[in-house]
Amino acid sequence: MDYNETVAVFESKHIRRYYDSVNEVWYFALVDIVAALTDSANATDYLKKIRKRDEELHFYLGTNCPQVEMQTESGKKRKTLAGSTAGISISPIYSFAQSRALQTMACQGGL
Image (cartoon, rainbow, N blue to C red):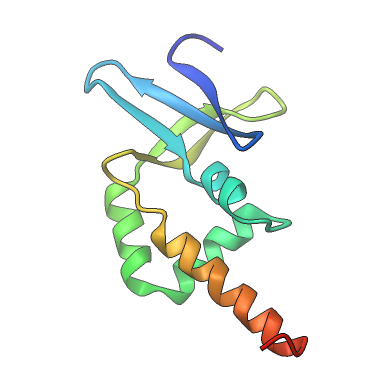
């Protein structure tokens, strides 16, 4: 991994990032952000589900978050959906996670 490909740590979770030296922009792997903000067992499926449920978010991510080649845990390079700090918003991820938590609490009699 060179300078352009490093890992950021957020609350002990690793978030892959890539620096585009031409445009001088850092890109962060969206699936890693989802994994850091939620306690989903499968962050990839979680991201797919919120994109399916929210058409506006699906369109926004498809338009503003390019596929960037990043190194996986196994060492292979794969293209992954990534966003810059200017291009991503975590509020849909949080609100989706909160709605799931409220549903779970309601089902368990907590509300």
